[in-house]
Length: 197
Image (cartoon, rainbow, N blue to C red; front, top):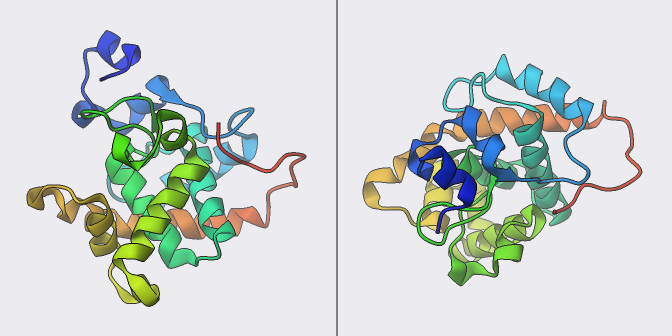
């Protein structure tokens, strides 16, 4: 089921461009993106080369930040963060969508079999679920040496003709993770830790 916003725009998920998704998406952080997210987005727009080039904004940067912070809080490294970011670039243009193909929702476009609507649209929960499945498919931390795109495709299980898309975004995913790590040291401490909706 597509959200009312998708239907009003007459769009389906596969037709949405990165510039459109933040207008039909749920927040990733409360109370919303920060000025620092805007600064990070500007820095990233100069670096990226594929789907998100020129389309990073405070909203999707705040979503990327929550994903990367969630990966780090789970005790995983930047490679795991890049796998998660490559996935959300492909699946949602780094937007917490309340609709999609079939029953898919959230940053990762997870199906109903993954959890409730509230869980799948909670960026922290959704990232944790993605990581749990990744670790099931790649036991003993074997994901650490596997290509980013291969791991993302194994977890998401798209049709064979779409598996390559995650690898296409791997380089930009690494750049986003690196920039967020660099900017994290510059960000003033917040009174409230980032989290889900």
